[in-house]
Image 1: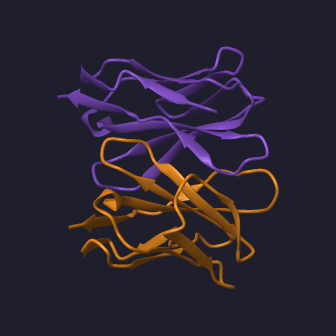
Image 2: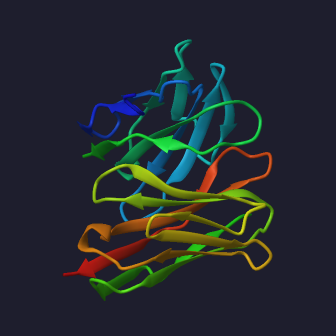
Length: 114
Length: 112
């Protein structure tokens, strides 16, 4: 079992550009959540996808959008990048429906905006 | 609004000591609480998950306790080793809510 995988590992972008980050969930998991972790802080919830729909969203602007594919993999898109978007972006997957379950995390994508 | 706090922010102890990390939360209506470990620049590894109906969970040298009424959890690490050096984060999930709400973490250094 490969666990949760994310790509790319590192990314450098310029202010104003757009970026797409990718996540493949753990086998058997159908729910994907995205988190942003700034240096020295705990992660912040961006949104969660289930059955190809955004099920819940945190306090992030519309520049942050996502998508979930029929195979449960997911993308995080960020438009009009700001310097403050520099962070580690973490993807987590979990199984099942209804009540929240234990989430399994990928290694993250380190985004640097210059 | 749920807030999660971890104290201390950093801790340095000699190898072999037993230690306790603290996590507090302001809203006791949690569904579960998880402790994670994060190595520098890396993702998160789940250590222990405690359901709201449970009082504690154990895995090897780790023991996590939960007191919902007081809004506190502790992570006890026995016989610490240099390989335990990492940042430890706690996170809660609320009833009928899917996001994890995180503390800022405790950076632990175990000195050989």
